[in-house]
Length: 177
Image (cartoon, rainbow, N blue to C red; front, side, top):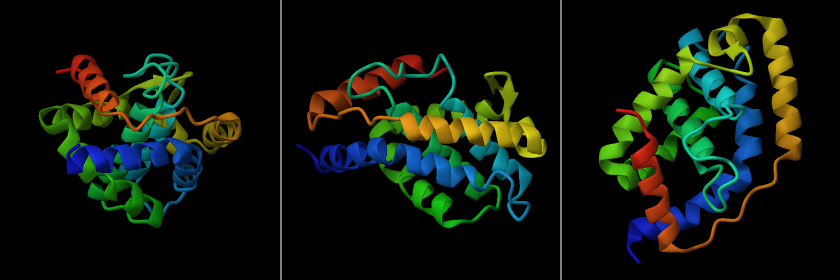
């Protein structure tokens, strides 16, 4: 097993277990006017991605289902930091991006482009812009997100290199561009 495989197989189960905490901590930034609106829109679009019915890896796929959600949160945190935002949760999540870049190599840029494009989409009738700029929409969204976080059960993720092969193949096939 390579060093990269070991790091991924160590990190990914943690990311899956921490997904609801990561999401609720990121949601606290949505109404913070001290953070630039474009950065908050990246956070909102990544959180909105949790509710997309068609995501890169369907949530029901054992071992892999919610990893794309964890990846999207981390890439969005990096994009938010690139827009001038700073907070402990953004720093922590963006700090994990290096392992994704190393794992996905040529597909990493496609993942970044995909996450950048999420700010223009909607899930459950809500856009990132509405979540950031409309307090009523944001309040309802955060309530729904909190309910999701309470009900979330982390899927297993086996320490099997085959899972990394499946993961990278899935993303390579599904990422646009």
